Amino acid sequence: MSNVVTLDQNSNTGSDVLARVKALLEQSTVTQAQIAKEIGVSGSTVNQLLNGNYKADPTAMVQKLANWLTARDQRADAPRDPGFVMTETAKQIMADMGYALTTQSIVIIHGISGVGKTTALREFQRNNNNVWVITTSPSRATMTECLYELAMELGLENAPRLRGPLARALRRRLRNTKGLIVVDEADHVDRPTLEELRILAEEVEVGLVLVGNSRVYTQLTGGPRSEDFARLFSRIAMKRALTKAKKADVLAFASAWNITGAAELDLLLRISERPGALRLVSKNLKLAVMYSGGEPLTEQILLHTFNKLEGE
Image (cartoon, rainbow, N blue to C red; front, side, top):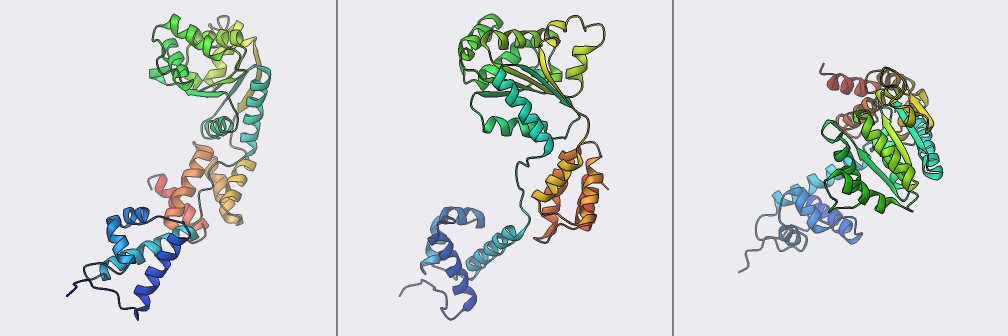
């Protein structure tokens, strides 16, 4: 006698759950392997449940599927992260990058953190060929490390680590590409490295964009070292200063998250004035979605999550 226990087909709950899961599979919305992973069972268990061959009381397993469907519905109803938002600042940054790419010029984009510089750089890179973005840091700020980062971005996996051979390999790779080198967090880079990048860009006729905080600009224009930077500074074709998050940028974020209430907009504008600007707004919105339970993002929820982020 078979010990296979099948669901009572008169059970609306069990049959409805299995019917919904089967419908999703037939629509190729999800796979059995994905479902199994998300409910914490094997693929064969899901297969047996759906085919009525599960060799045990299926109640607990069906409940797992029901919980999975409920969570899926809640995620579908919840406000979704819109991803990249085309703000006014992003448009300006991408226009500046387009200018540098088209004319093989040097452009500096500098200002406060959290206004969307890095996200705009990455979006421009995704939508344009031959754009190479590297990020410097205290450990990657020397000339050799910076050039090696660029080599990795260019796909030169076996690039030499000695400065001279490395520079020559980069010139061979970049020549005739008419591309664009972008250095994010360029405020970490010292004068000799900036000069090396400037000479490299000019020799192979590619554009160069330096992005960072105000230091990346002020170190070129003032202080006792200003003469050392004169050759580089004189070649800068465009400078973009970003001193604060624009109101239009905050409203663009709010619109992308389907937030239209006056109280909610006012709160987001006030949050954007804090250190972190749009980055803080974005973090707050993402946390608010977790607390919203699929409901619209209200002023109360946004204020609660902001206080959470602030440790209050």
